[in-house]
Image (cartoon, rainbow, N blue to C red; front, side, top):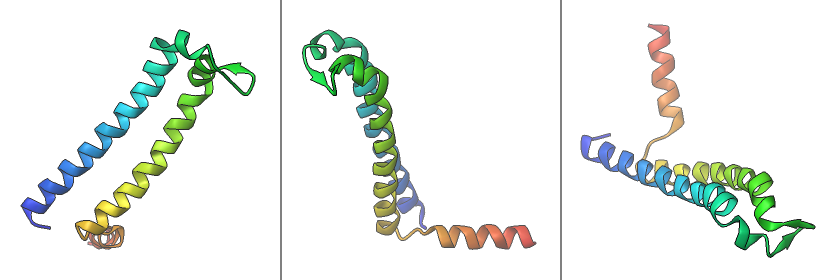
Length: 97
């Protein structure tokens, strides 16, 4: 991979990570702490929504964000023609040396 492609790849990767972390921060801190009083006016599964997000919702969102990251990184790898098999083969070649 050329230096220009590598820089573009990592900028895209960092942009993705920061955007997913911003979503998780908003859900876990914003909805779970700052907006809890507003969200407690609604119910989800018999529990106040603010309480539910603070206790369970942020964990579910985090797991969903992991799967979104995996999917987006697969698309990014295909875009920049990187593959895990090429990385694995170079790693195994280094180990055998």
